[in-house]
Length: 545
Ligand code: G1P
Ligand code: ZN
Image (cartoon, rainbow, N blue to C red; front, side, top):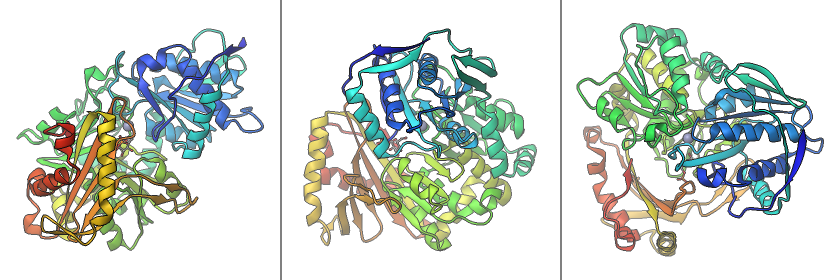
């Protein structure tokens, strides 16, 4: 039976770039989740209602995923959807959800994830709405959702038993059909269209070795199916491949800190040919060659320079987009290919318009997100497959590909230093005072380097003209070096200051330096300019990537 439940607004429900993320305890309390879901439905409901429309639902398997999915399904039925597609066991990686939305011409989807944030009863939970293009809702939609959360007075739901999420096939909730689907099938079919699976099978048959760390998160089922079963990678190539509600107590963020075991394996004498990992919801990727960590900014540039070696991109790429803090390595490739390179604010949603308009083929962020026009999310498994396809065709190691790339384009040494859980007032004060200094910097010398530009990054979307300002403070030097400061929009406690540092090195004889050593002077300068240590009292960053 459909029923209407009276409720009242809850403060602080503003969905950010990646949806709404909070502690599980907050999500599971009272009407928190139903309020948000109803607000999404109210904000996006077409005039004709949801009759005939399909909603995709799935998540990354974290704690509270299954309960939340049942809530969403009941509310979708009560709000008049004709159909829900839900991943078996409640599982859908974020890129697979994007793929399913597009493949089945759905109205949109609700993705349950807090990405790389820790899970478990004390961890984080999250939810976001993706539209019919398969991508995260644009700001005007998330603003409309927020407006609904502020005035919500009731939500619609149904009574009745839970849907059996373990059983593939059709079930009914009132008049709504619920189809439990294999979470991997549509995604695998898409990957088979993009890449040369025969060449990849030959690569593994020739003895190529892979270590893929699914970090007990959502990519386990995808990685087992694709790398081991389809492509013949040795059993055991996929590590931590069973999704766990608390990710085994780990932080499912594929970087050198949280994927330390994988990193150390790749730096050891037992290293496989390729090491890779993905995050909680499967949209990020980490790529490590034998003895060589590939910075995500470099990975984007190297994939762009070699994409034509994979069937999907044989005709060449039409353009590249990178987030502002991502290094300029991709720009140099774009220039050589004669295609545009767009610089967008941080967050995948800014790539959506460019992809939909056919302006770019590849996109990437320094935070280990890379993707293409095949879906409207970044895609971890896709990035690994593109690397594998390139290695299969070039018959070279990651190290050889990287060194040839740097010899041709020059090397952008790159690092990001994060200062987490800072006092918000201190972090904001630091940014405000630094912003005030910026106008006086261009033309001056800092540590023997000429400042070429300094500003607070603002972006005008070339497709819809919308303006996003306050996107990060950047200081560019005449020699191609750059320092960028921004406050995280995804943290759930205190403020996180991210400092992005890059140095361009054209000389091939200097391409073998250790990254932190190569950037030490700039790191010191970045600290002095903003007074990081002095103001925060922190002597070292929380995370260096
Ligand atoms: C972080 C990353 C950003 C990414 C986002 C969602 O956001 O820096 O590149 O798009 O997570 O995965 P931030 O916390 O910096 O706002
Ligand atoms: Zn993610």
